[in-house]
Length: 308
Length: 296
Image (cartoon, rainbow over all chains, first blue to last red; front, side, top):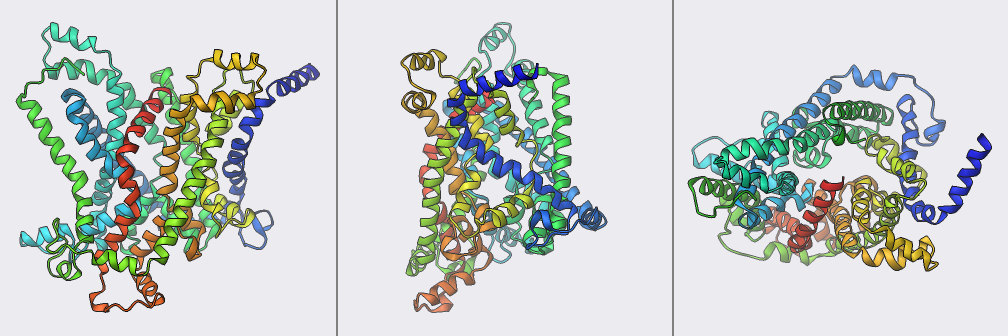
């Protein structure tokens, strides 16, 4: 049996060598930049030093994990990551679905300008956005503080007040991404068969009834899918948002530090490579389990919507 | 669209109002940045950031161009990386996606799995960083700004969505003419896929142009600093500019030093080309999104 399998394989390879050659350079990049680092995860169990490299450095068992999980940081960054991402998912989904439905109701031509205006921030990098938030939040000259002052209120030194940051980060996130998110839902709505609405109108359904009985039910699979996908990625965060917008202010770490920025700082600032990879492995594994769980849930609800 | 009655009802008016307000919310903050960049430092210090500058001045821009070395270098690096990176990435992405889009390809499932599994699980930042710096020795080279983004799974997925529409008969007819896969790809597939290449190419160019991550991780050398990372460093430390001015032997009265306005002018210069290309980009993004949403 085995020989015939190998014979068939060799024959297939021969027959498809043209396509394999086309795929090969791209695949090589995938192997080098995505698969080789996976072996580097052994670093989480090592006491890394540069000269010995990944393989030569001495083993350290679970010390790196112990160090991280017994520190306050473990709870803090996990909580920040999950709560802030949950907040983003809820706000972004509600707002973009409502906006998409409203745009759909208004008609394609009249909403073009709005779409452009809302999509615009998506094209700015987080570094540029950090300049925008700086212009708004600067303690002496910032737009918000000027406003507060004109109402006779005290200035707020935002870059030293952690309590405001869950809101600021949510605002910044929505500001940059809402145009993109609503376009996805809007595109989904464009695919709805128009005869549903014609039939409903003949039966005397009002616009609000049409939205509730036709638009929303037809949009639900897409909402479910995108929400579950976002939950699957809840352990990962948009690094630029959490790193640039708080302007690297140490006073704000309590509410702005997430797993990704924590790993980055452990790697580049404190140079604790073993611990940084332990946290990275924690993130990768929990993230993977979450994606699998979410996919299993999607599969149970509707097999066609499952990712794999 | 639902049965459209274009008469203005109260509901439509309210919806328009919501959108006008929200559009303002999206655009206004950036208009502040533009305004500050055209304000004089004294006005800013006295009156704070204003939506309309009291006195319009180009001082901040003149100041930046008085010693443009680091700025021009950063532009050069970013343009080079964007052009070279996009060309390489687009070609390899198209080849890989084409092989994956062929239903008769024996290893289609295996290769697809290899590419898309990376979206679910990866080694994380640290091993990736050590591999690039220690084993590939790419730090402080232009390659460090290009190679890590050559194949991004999402771009492969997008391209595959486009190429899956090529009728198999076309490929069959090429094969009858005796063309191998390789020459069929270059002479038939690439020329008829121009819209797909343009769309995915813009996505890729957008990634390279707006990137600060690779610069932040791998570049210490001033002459290789890409634009976005330079912008971050200026935000982090305005003295960076001061030292650049001193090195350029430009005599400027430091009390007039355009601190805030120069920062904002720098931000405008850094996203300049992106702002000009934005309307063009938007059209292709929506097209890419449609393909991604339908097929992804």
